[in-house]
Length: 206
Ligand code: ADP
Ligand code: 5GP
Image 1: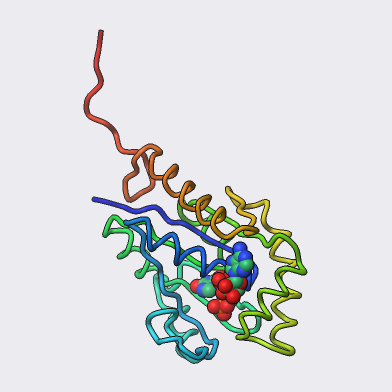
Image 2: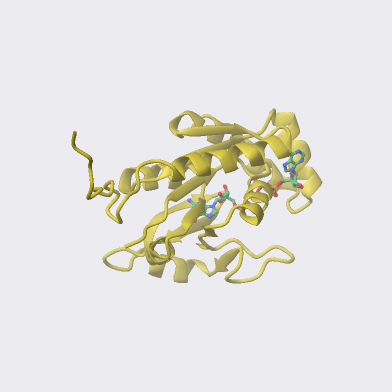
């Protein structure tokens, strides 16, 4: 059965991850975004079921405690809970599309331990530029903005655990790099659902 790649993407908030993913998805077919659950309140313009499944803490914990397993990974990030549904990922992978998980460094570590995945970290060119972008986006301010900036330094410290690093300085270059990573990973040995390479039936003998 067809099984897409699992693409784990992490970046400190405000690095440009959403922008890069949107641009790559608009030009490269065969990609699908896994919609996470979160207890964070929806921002203006966000729609339940599109950016996230917005749930309260009780509902989140109920999914987390489902047996055999509700979430492939989950974590508390900037004070809110976020999690990736096991079934969500399984069903998306079975369509043969490559599945993008936009998750934090704690969640990425859990995924790497549990399933085969391609991991990509997006870093800002500098902390000053990160702050400028986050302020420019205008979705957080005050203590919440400060919390996201404080967290960024810790997240960047985990970048070395990822297979690929993209520094999002010039947006067009970062988009091209992410596209190239996906194309290269698609060209590796084809895999089965279990993550094992497909056994090719035919080999020529001389
Ligand atoms: P994230 O999803 O990582 O939190 P966003 O994609 O929302 O970040 O980007 C944060 C802000 O930075 C947005 O206003 C976006 O337009 C801007 N941005 C993204 N990439 C770049 C770049 N390479 N140069 C300048 N601004 C950028
Ligand atoms: P935001 O609130 O800005 O949408 O996301 C904040 C952070 O939570 C980002 O670093 C994002 O990658 C992370 N995040 C989003 N969904 C998940 C998830 O399902 N699991 C984990 N561990 N982190 C997530």
